[in-house]
Image (cartoon, rainbow, N blue to C red; front, side):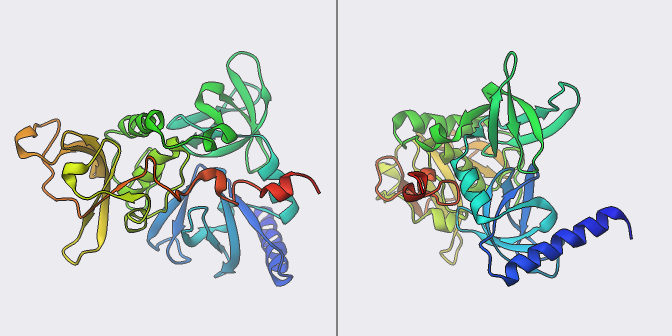
Length: 320
């Protein structure tokens, strides 16, 4: 048996021991995009993805090599143990208090601290710890694996600043701008990255620009915000939801105004719901909205800043 396998078994034994003692375990995704499976198997359906630095609440080990876990948006599933950096409670609190950076480039590329080889990438929404400013336009960051790397400062924003955003008119335009930046990206069931999102993964990413962390699925997102009476009352930025013949919400897009919407369906593209407005560049979308929700100005929105996986409660940050 080789050394990497022995190390893997040793780490796994420690994790199982911690679980047996009922320790509170917290994890960070340590690869650029981790698939979260519906069952503890590589061939199982991918329900969603978790970007690098996403915090997760670890429940138990399944089939010896899969973490059963919960995402910040409430989605549950299984991620392979090799993709998670495990933190104990004190380490998790330290991470929540640290100065962190969120990737705002669709793909933020990293390089080694010696300025040489590439060091991977951070997709939009991924989180790294800020170490300091380096010469020129670079910053040094710490990855969940414990390694350090350099990234372009313009590709990141302070996580506290990102979470302080409000879903106002200015933020609404950033939401749409983010969506437009993904035009042409292929649809991927369960995808939540700019490289290949599904419909609700697409909208979830876009609304990060307004400081929100929407639920994962379209049917859940259809419960957020305020109800809009009908298409004639829709405003730019409203969420358009579509239903199957059985009435189940199965698709979502963002309304652009004048009968047009932005969606991920096949690819990310702009469509029109007015037949006389259709063109090869903006095709006709035949389905009619089953529900419309408005997030700007709505009450009880799921703000990123209120998520206890990303931020420690004020009672803990105030001092011990």
